Image 1 (cartoon, helix red, strand yellow):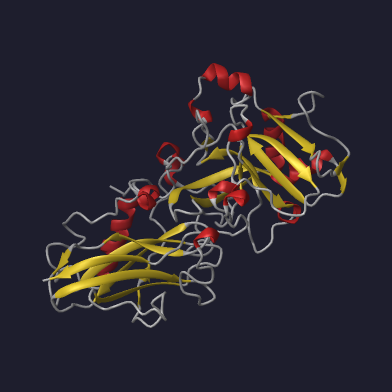
Image 2: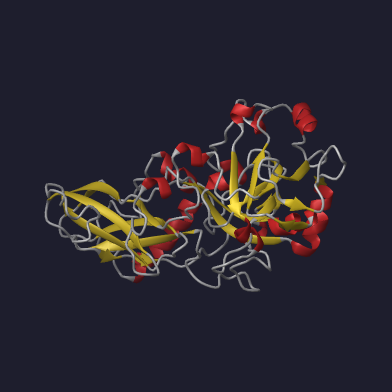
Length: 414
């Protein structure tokens, strides 16, 4: 039977890797073959246990805003405010405070607002699909990995016939008709109109993993920004404002966050034995978030717990780091219909195989067999090295531009 969950896939891949190294026959009974792995119970592991590689929509970690959260309101109220596919409408207007010149405003009052059927018709010609890890700026957490599908935002912007004075697009969703609950994000118009650095387009998303986008995940329609943290991908989309404002006006900008930083790369543990036998290989495994700069390596280091941190080396660059093995893609793409990546998905070839591995903006498994250690208490750390040779948490070590602190765990060797 093929593995179905992310954790099952993880241990299927790591077992095969360690078997290939010929190690499993000599490790202690507390190995990946026959013992329960130590899985982190902190919230920053929620998106990888026990989900498939592509997270089932109901198992995404939910950090929705609103009181009440829009997905929790009764269906009668959802129909009233346009949170069902048959009642959804999107208004696209010029920002009244920073006016952009448009040939057409799309509003409910004028009967020109975009409805769901019209969006789907645009999708017959323009729809795109791509994998993306949804993660949180300040938690460093994978909330879930999805295959997102929708219409590029630029195709909707062009419907308004913009002419001049357009520098930024900001957008927001349903917020219980309460100005205090409004949460908005924004993008420079250049990012909306052009996909640089081999990025997929920003989309008005209506499908996740092949099915309609559920209300819990922001349906009927949400924004999805491929390279961005989750706060850019506003749920329950209702309004788009085309603006001449020169700077970001996101809600998060008012909360001391760097609102334009893309996803960072980082490594995290999934399996570390609480105790290890001295002299025997120690099998460690984990996953990596593959940020905008990619992941060339995952590395681990182990040092005596008693060793004092060096104030001149806050990121442990002087430590002895060992390369782990970045494992290949899953044997099947769990979480998708037929466990197959549909033809035409960005980042995959016609047969559903990834064009590169690991894929940017997704996650990957890794494993390493550490040499046997003498008895004692040790600190174990892991990090990524990106495609430019920059080790985590560089080049952006500050939490406000995306959390990617070096993770540390303790291990006892007896």
